[in-house]
Image 1: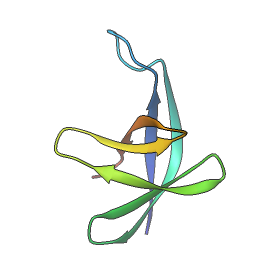
Image 2 (image 1 turned 180 degrees about the vertical axis):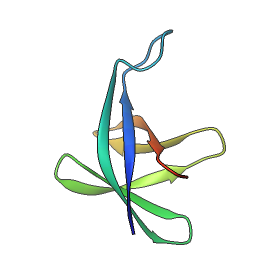
Image 3 (image 1 turned 90 degrees about the horizontal axis):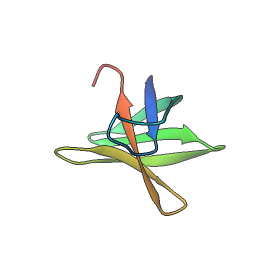
Image 4 (image 1 turned 90 degrees about the vertical axis):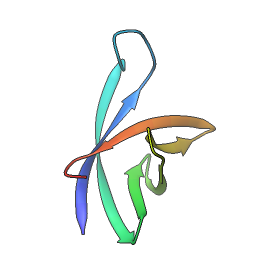
Amino acid sequence: MESIGFLQHGHGTDGPFRTERVHIRHQYLDRWQAYYEGAWRRVHLQVNRTYIVHRGERITILIEGV
């Protein structure tokens, strides 16, 4: 099953500086992956935040329909 997600790059008082559309796939239970920079990356789910880690940076991701 594949969905669409939106990465929110950058930080600031007015929100993210850039939003980027990416493909999301659900593997099983609470395991999701996002396709970013040519590879599938694990989506980390927390109570107040969902994100991927790329080059040591946590990038917030919003998953459509979840």
